[in-house]
Image (cartoon, rainbow, N blue to C red; front, top):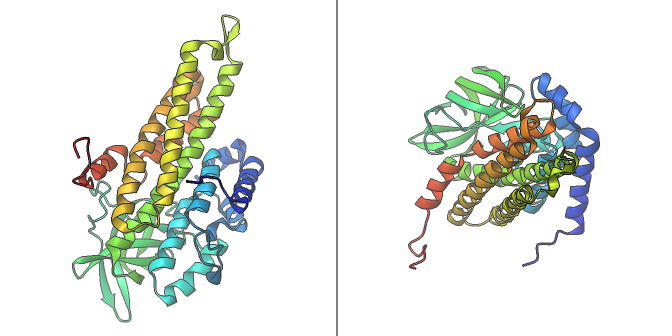
Length: 371
C-alpha cells in the first residue's frame, strides 16, 4: 500500500506548519491561555487558510477534501498544541454536510467554511461515561420547529461557539439538533481546561432548535469517529514534537561533563519513545483510512486506534517528563504543556479503558489465536 502523500497534501502540510511556526509561537499561546483559552483571531486565521471548510463541499464554500487532508492538518496543529478547536469544525462540517437537510446546509455550511460561525458538538452528559446512547436531554415539537431541554458538559469553547450540535431524545430515540448560543433558553458557564483551552457547561431550557436528523445515534457515532480520527492525528503531532524536545534537551543537558544523550540507558528509553510514536502514527493512518468505511467496521477501527494512541500518549508523555527531570513539569517550559495536552487528548472522546471495552465488545467470533 502506498503511504506517500500527494503534492497537494504536502503543500497543505507546509502551509499549516508555516502558520504554526510563525503565527502561533509559545508566547502567543501563553497569552491566549491567560486570556481564557480561545482566541477568535487565531481561529479566523485558520479559516483564512481554508481549514474550517476542509470537510465541506466546494458547492457550499469549502475545500471538499477528505480524511487524509484532515489528518495532515491535525498533525501540524498538534505540533503547535493549538488551542482553537478545529477538530470540532471538522465534525460540524462532516456531520451537517452528510446528514442535514438542504435548509440547514444552506444556512450553516458557508458560515462554517468561512469561519464566520464556530459550531461545536455538545454530546457529553453527567453520568454517561462516554456512552453515546445515554442521553437525558429531550426535544419537543413546537410549531414548525423544535425546542430542546437538558444539560451538556465539557463543551469545547462552549461559551464562545456560535451554535451547538445537540443529541436529544424524541419519540424514544435520539435525534440531532442545531441550537444557536444566542437564542432564548440557552446559557453557558465557561472555564479553562487542563491543557489551557476552554470548555463550558451548557444548559438548555425549551431552547429553539433546528432538526439535523432523526437518525441521531448513527449520525452521532459518525461525528465522534470523525473526532477520534482528528484526535489521533493531533496526538501524533504532539508526540512528534515532544520527542524532538526531549532529544534536544538530552543533547544539551550535561552531567559528569558529557551530554546525557550519551548514556546508553537513556538512549534506550528514547528508542522506546520512538517506537510508541511510530505505533501511534500507524494507527492514526488506520483510523484515517477507515473513516469512510461501513459503520460497524469504522467503529471497531476507531476504538482500536484510540487504545493504541492512549497507550502511546501516556508512555511518551511520562518518559519525556522523566528524562527532563524537574524542569519537565514547570509551567515556564513548553514541554510541560505538551504533556498536559497529551493527558487531555487521552481522555477526549473516550479514554483508553473505555475503548478497550469497545474493542472487546466488537471483537468478532474469529478473533484470537485459536481462530
